[in-house]
Amino acid sequence: MTQPPLLVTCGLPYTNGPCHLGHLRTYVPADCYVRYMRRTGEVVVFVSGSDNHGTPIVVSAEERGISPRALSEQYHRHFDETFKRIGVNFDHFGMTDDPANHHRTREIVGRLEKNGYVYKQVVHQAYCPKCRRFLPDRYVEGTCPYCGKQARGDECDQGCGKHLEPGEIKDPVCKVCGTKAEFRDQEHYFFRLSAFKDYLLPFLDRLRGTSNAKNYAIGWIKDELHDWCITRTLEWGVKFPGRDDLVVYVWVDAPIGYIAFTEEWAAKTGKDWKRYWCKDNR
Image (tube, rainbow, N blue to C red; front, side, top):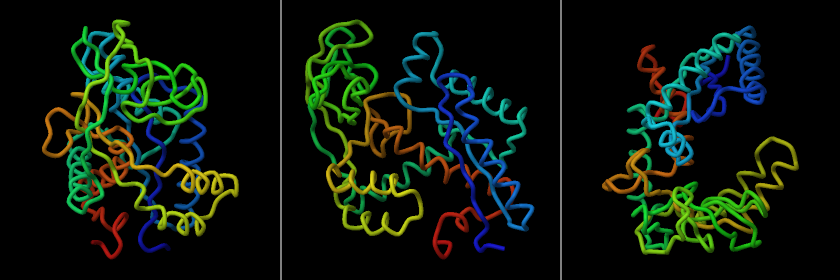
């Protein structure tokens, strides 16, 4: 029997559309693995949950005339019921918009800022003069600064596939009203990802996995490990500590959701979540 007990998680389904066959390639194998490990005598906790934040959900909710929370709850129930019908049995299936994840995300981000790994910086962000708001991610489209193809605000999905930081896209246009956007200064917060290059390279070298996956990650770190903007100008999401006008980027709070879901499971079962996530329970 392993010490500490085994924790198994799955990718979080995004609450912006229904479950489809592609989802099952993640959850069914994980459920099979959990069943096998339990039959061998292992103590296993199987947690997952729905991913509820980000601009796509806001855009879809606005189109339907409902709140992002209402849309997320609708698809959260759909995924939960679907998994139960096909026999995928999570010990806990949470939501990243629930209080546990808001608390844990703000706590972790606050500690990162306190220790110098998160800093603020003024960036040029697309702003729609007609809608009178800054345009994060899916609210803006334009030209990729790297390959010249049409791109959305956070990714060149039609061309080179590069991730785009706020203010990088060229010739921005508001996707809501079609108005040509302008760039205005706004304060955002960045994660000092570049500081972890020397740690990540030997860490990845020790990991098990396919050589293709490892080499891809190693190449990305050697060539493109830049600091990462981790805030967005939205009302929907986890508020950045001390700011009412910014939320934490969904790709920060969603992974932290795994910890929060374990905390929620532990709270209802009387267990200690730190046994699964913290070395020496600290």
